[in-house]
Image (cartoon, rainbow, N blue to C red):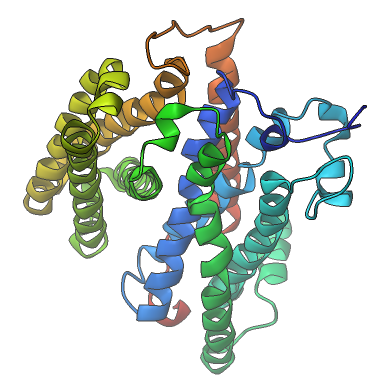
Length: 369
C-alpha cells in the first residue's frame, strides 16, 4: 500500500545522518533570538539590542524549513506539507505529522515576527526616508506604515506589544521541536533513556542564539562596543552556558548512579560530554571576563560554537550510532558533499540577514528617534 507522500517522523526508521537536519537545528536559534527580542521589548530592557536580535532571528528562522523539507521523500511535492498536512489520523496514515504541524506554526511565527519588526522600526523608517533618495526612499516610506509622528509611534508600540506576546507561543514550540522530534523516533534506545534531553537541547539553542548575537555585534561595532548592549547579553549567555554544562553533568550522573546499563550503552558518548562541559564552562568564564573587558567577547562566541556544535553532534549523530542492543557503536556514514549540504542553509540565513540589514536598522534610539 502506497502512502503517496510522507514526512520523516511518519516512518519507523532511523534519521541517520542528514547534514541539513544538523544545520537546521542550529538555525532554530533564530526562534530563541526572537523570543529574547520579544521579552526584551515587553520588559522595556535591552531596547538598543532589539533591532539586531530581531533581524538575526528572522533571518535564521525564515530559512529553518529548508531542513524538514529536504527530508521529504519527494522534495518536488514539498508544497503538500502545507496544502495536505497530516494533522489528524487517516486509514493510510494512522498517526499525525509533527513536521506538518510545525510547518504551520512556522508560518504563524514568521508572519508575527515580521509584523513585530515592521511595527517597531516604523517611525525610524520614516525618519530614514527623509535623508535618502530614489529606491531606498520608497522602501523606507513603505515600511514606515504612515507613522510620521512620535504620537502615532506610541500607538504602534501598543500593537507591537500585543504581537510580541502572540509570538512567544509558536516560537517556543519551535524551540522545543528538535527534542520532540527525537523522542518520536522510539527505535533509538539512547534518546529514550535521556530524560534531560529536552531541557538540555532548549538551553543549548539559547547558547547558540546569544553566541551568534555577540559575534555579529562584535564584528559590526568592532572597537565601538557599548557595554549597555553587550553586558546583558553576556549575562544571559553565561547563564545558558553554565546551565547546559550543569545539566550535561547531571545527566551523566543519572546514568552512572541510577541506570548502569544506560551508562554502559552511552560510554562512547561520554568523552564528547566532557568536552562539551569544558567548552561551555570556558565560555561561561569568558563571558564574565568580557563584562569587564568587552574586546575579548569574540572568544566567548568561538568557545560556545565549538561546544554547542560538539553537543549537537553527540546528540544527533553519535546517539544514532549506538546499536539497538547497546552492544556496538558504528561509524558515521558521510556521503558526497555533506559539508556543503550542511552549511548551505546557514549560508542562506546569513545572506538573508545581510539583505535585511540594508532595509532595516540594526540599532535605533529610544522612541524611534
